[in-house]
Image (cartoon, rainbow, N blue to C red):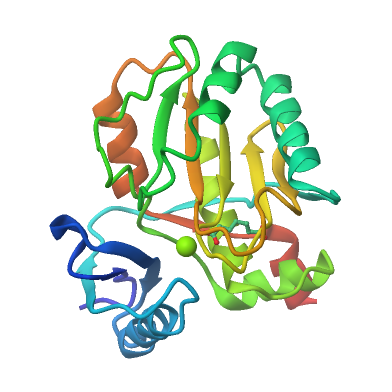
Length: 261
Ligand code: PML
Ligand code: MG
């Protein structure tokens, strides 16, 4: 094994049986690890699922596999935080941002109108902005973005520079949003957590960056959402293949410079 070998490490956990047997989703996680760090990576994911505020899992799967493709490096999307007082205001800002990047009003209304019905997914929904239809055919599973990470030291430098708390959650969400937004067919992503204790969500796109919105649901609400708005998608299979299989490392360049100096 050469030193350059990396492994994708994935976890999913549920309650009342496995997801495919109707179990309720508790937690999921993605990491990229070297061989030497695998024990630690597995432990990080184990810990994440065992301490999740959605509940106690009775099913968990952690798997790793060698990454057989070169890992592409992406710069993190620029980050901004929109402070809001209410869910209503948060949704209004989210809708405004989606409109700015070209999601038609009709599509925004349809998606927000059905958002609570579609909250049980463990992955993301893909919505075509021309038809306002969900196109991924993945039912409850949705599309799970995988094979992505951000080295801790580089992330910590980025977070310190931006005066943002070094949060694993923000890191994971920004990695995912950066990967998704980089695909030319992605117009925007809308997300908020299914964690009842976490109410900040975001709208992200290449144009807007990662726009956090401090209140997109009420505290205690277990309904989350993750929607990828796409336009001009000629090959759904290739899009999903990119999201699931293309390995990505997010890397903040200024962080490297700061560390060398
Ligand atoms: C999640 O927890 O599943 C998504 C969290 C999205 C927001 C993270 C942040 O920027 O605070
Ligand atoms: Mg979660």
